[in-house]
Amino acid sequence: MTCAVVSQLLSRRNGREEFKIFNEANISGHIQEKVDGSVSGTRIKVNGQVYYFLPTTGKENDNGIFSYTAEVGDSLFKQSFSDTLLLFKKGKLLKYTFIHIK
Image (cartoon, rainbow, N blue to C red; front, side):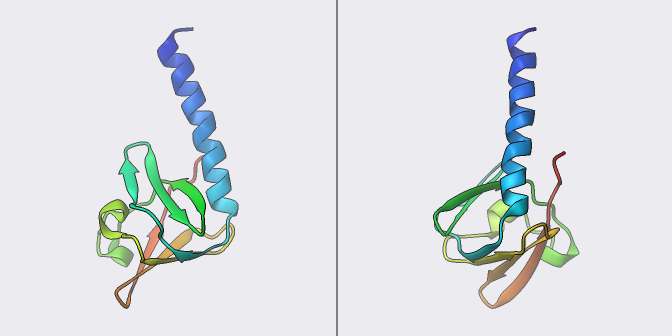
């Protein structure tokens, strides 16, 4: 196998593991660090825990890209295994669904 194939397989496995942690989590708190977004996922830190996920845009979030919209101090809420992450920003509720990695 080439290095690129091995790297891709490891990334997929890590992505599944990171999504499992995010999906199973009950999240309720404020964003503690700058939100990092990239093509491989979005990183958030809430209550000392780091989560990675792939949010989508739509009407429920004014078509706002999560990593450009969410800021330190904004509140997040997600129940375990929920398909929606709630972002409370300056008195406004934005709902983000996300890609489920299997």
